[in-house]
Image (cartoon, rainbow, N blue to C red):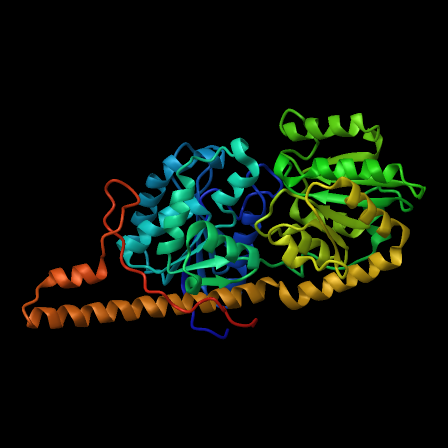
Amino acid sequence: MIEAPLRVALISEHASPLAQQGGVDAGGQNVYVSHVAAALARRGHHVDVLTRRDQRALPTAVDMRPGVRVLHIDAGPPEFVPKEQLLPYMRAFGSEALRLMRRSLRYDVVHANFFMSGVVGLRLQRQLNLPLVQTFHALGAVRRLHQKEADKFPAERIDLERRIACEADCVIAECPQDAADLVAHCGAPADRIAQVPCGVDLEEFGPGDKLQARRRLHLREDEFIVLQLGRLVPRKGVDNVIRAVAHLHRMPERRSWRLLVVGGESTQPDEARTPEIGRLRGIAREAGIEDRVTFVGRRDRDQLRDYYLAADVFVTTPWYEPFGITPLEAMACATPVIGAAVGGIQHTVVDGLTGYLVPPEDPELLALRLDDLRRHPEIARLMGRAGLQRVQREFTWDGVAFKLAGVYAQVAARRAMQGSSSIRLASAAGQAGAGAAAVRHLARPHLAAVGATDAAHAEVVAMPLANSGGQG
């Protein structure tokens, strides 16, 4: 334990740390919240994760590990609701969160994850005078650029994100591209942005014996295995990978190959539950490689390491990716990564050192890079080792928690100083006969409300947070 212990409220309205990864709305944010909470607790902090109740039988509170509780908040029906349809329930979420917080020990900081949690966070910031740290994980303006009419989030998302970015005490950027997008699309003040990456659990993911992993998974030892792992939705670009391996199939090198696609809504690949599987199978069938593409289904976290170990290369070519945790997991297992040169992937993958970067929709170039690694396994091994060294140095969850705790302490201290200044100013104003109106004007300038009944939001003073400090 280095820093003073803090009480942290992590808000993650749709992404529970208890959910299984790989479903439509269960992915990187779930992993982020789970590991940030656990790593903060290991440093001596207390963390409560507030997430929406999506099953009636869920208990109100679950002790996830010492120092971490998951609190299920009643907001909307106690069943799965696509995150694109959750915004109308955020008022109820905020009211329930306020009720719980007013009955508990005071939190030192609120850390909201995703824009809807940020809506709740602004209300808590205003009504409880708590510092708000915001991580968006994805920006609506960027999503709209890439998905266009396929983006089903409400149109007001973009305006809400702009407001949150400007009013939060600090906004976390997960990579340089994220920081640039926050300024360009949301108008976030650059001196209130702290860059803190995502991480990888080096106890959960690490190097191991490739052949033993293949035997456990009943995979052939002599095949060149390409792995795609993650949520099965169109923007992840799995169709691009299938088209690339179709090109690979026509290349002169005759070493047999196989594409493993891990993910979906069920442990057995089910086109009814995961419609994207049906679309992808159709692409493989058209290309004449259906027998070389294996849809595995969803796998639990404790099963993923074997898939990374068994693979000769991990491939991820989404249209866009705010950060992307799966490349780090592959690198931690000493597996080279070929990734799209977008978002956080272009920061985590070092082209030519830990793998290759390619355009997101260029299957021919992707096929050439795959063939490079198929023909030169010694290069693949060197890239894998370089990737492992990179994550050990730059992307551990303990390092992430150290940096976040520094941000939390700074915004909490700044808000406490603001509070003390306001009290002193109020006293001076009263003695001088200036009245409380001057203090109210200082503390609560005119700002548009989040909701029709919300009061104006307290002023946030800019602070130099762009450098979040080193790793602990």
